[in-house]
Amino acid sequence: MRARLALAAAAVLGLALALPGPLPAAARKKKPAAQEAPANFDKFLPVFGTRLADLPQGPMKSLADSACLACHSSDILLQQHLTEKQWAATVTKMVGWGAAVPDDKKSELVAYLVKNFGPENTWQPVTTRPMGR
Amino acid sequence: MNRRQFLSATAAAAAIARAGGIASGAQAAAKKPTPVSDGIPPSRRRLLQLNGYAANAETPLDALTTYITPNDLFFVRSHWIPAYPSLKTWSLVVDGEVERPREWKLADIKALPRTTVTCVLQCSGNGRALHRPAIPGVQWRYGAVGNARWTGVRVKDLLARSGVRAGAKHLHTFGSDKPPEKVPPFHRSLELEKVLEDGVLAFEMNGETLPQPHGAPLRLIVPGWTGNHWMKWITHLSPQPEPQKGFYMDTAYRYPDKPGEPGVAFKPDEMHPVTELFVKSCFTDVPASAKVGSSVSVRGFAFSGAPDVSRVEVSEDQGQTWKDAVLDNQHDPWAWRLFTHRFTPSAPGPATLLARATDSRGAVQPKEAVWNQSGYLHNGWHAAEIAVTA
Image (tube, rainbow over all chains, first blue to last red; front, side):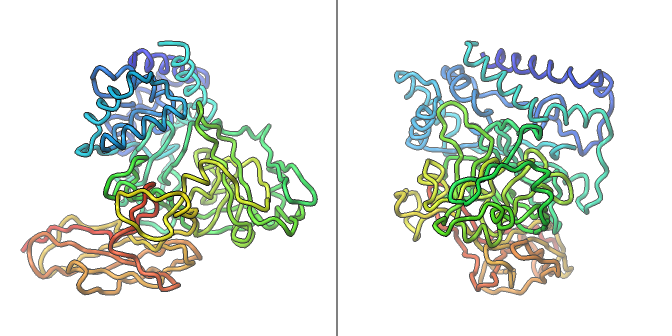
C-alpha cells in the first residue's frame, strides 16, 4: 500500500513537474555540485528534495501507513523514542485528530510503534540540501 | 489504496505544487545554483530534515557561524502542509476592538514607513530532543534557530490606521494554513503591549522577498519571543480584550510556572504561555582535534529574551572555573552575539569545553534546562568535544 501511495504521489508530482516546461530530461544529465547532492537527494521530489523513508515492516505497517502518513511523512515517527505509555497517549491524541485507527487495532499499533521507535531508538536526521537552491 | 488515502496523497502533492515547491525545484534544475559568498563553505550548506512533510528541518550548528543566517540555511518549521497564499487574492484583515476595520493589500502595507530589525528566531521546541525523559514531538536538537534581518512595517503603524480601542489587550493572529482532518487550527494571541512596542509585519528576510516556507507574503516578527508568536502567512489581526482560546493557547505552547520533577506532567493552570527566549549559548565551530600547547579557536553564538547578551564564558574543567570568551562587535537588540574562545590544551586525551551566557538583565544560562512536557526552551550548558594529542 505504501509503495502504491508513494507511486500515486510520485505520479501526481511527475504531472506537476511536467507543467513548467521540457527541462527535466536535460536537467537530469547535469552533474550538480557535490555539496548540493547528498546521496538521498532527488531534485524532483518536493520541499527538501529527499526520498521519504518507508516505515519498518511488520503486521501494523499498512495501518500505520494509512493512519499516519496521510498528514505527515514517516520521519516524525522514525525519530521518536517513546515508552509504551507515551505511544498509547500519542495514538489516542492522533485518533482524536482524525487518524483512522480501529479500536481493536490500537494496542497492536502501539506495540508496533514501541518495538520500532522505543526508548532505545537511535535515529539520526536526514541530511538534505539548502532550501530553494 | 482507498479514496481517502488517494485524496490525501494527491492533496499533499497538489499543495506542494501550489506552494511553489515543484516550481522552485524545476527552476533550480534549470539554472546553476546561485553562488553564495556569505562565509559558509559549500561543505556545510545543508539542512537536517526532521519531517519531509509537513516541512521541518534544522540547521546544523556548523552552518550557524555567521551573524546573519542565510535564507537557504534558515531552519524551517511547519505544523502542516500549507497552501501558500496567492498574492492576487491575499489580503490582511484588521478587525476586533478597532474604530475602523480594514482590509489591506500588500502594496498598501508596503507604502507605510518601513523598518528593519535584526533578531533571533528560535522555535520554542528547539532542544526538545535533549530533554530527559524523552518527549514526543519534532526532535529538534540545536539548530531550530537563526538570526536574520527582517524588513517590513511596524505593527503599531499598521494598527494605528484602524484606531485600536482602549479595551484591547491581546492581539489575535491568524494565518492561512489550515490543519488536516480534526486537528485544531493554529490560532494564537499575544499581549498587545509587546507587539505594539516591538512587533513588525515583515515582507523581506535578509534583503530578499520573504520566502514562502518562512511565511510569505507577510509574517509577524516578535523580537525576543519564541517562534510560535511569529505567525506565518498572516491574514487576520484582531485586537481583543481577552487572549485567544483553543488547543494552541490553552494546552500547547505553555511553560511551567516553576520547575517540577522531570517526567511528571504539569497541569495547564500550572503553566503560562511560552513567550521570552531564555538565555542560551551554543558552540558552532569547534576543531575535532588539537595539540597540547597549541591554541585553537572555538566559536559560537549566544542570545536571550533580554535585548542583549553581556557575557559568554567557557569552562575547560567541567564547570569548575570559567574564562570570558570574546564577544563579537556586531549586535542588535534581540539578535545573537557571536563569541570566540582560544583554547590551549595542556594534556592529551578528550577535552570538553562548556559554554554559558549571561544576558543584559543578569540572567545566567543554567547547567540543566527545566524539564517540561512539551520540551520547550532547552538552554542547558552546551558541550564541545576536542581530541587532544601530544
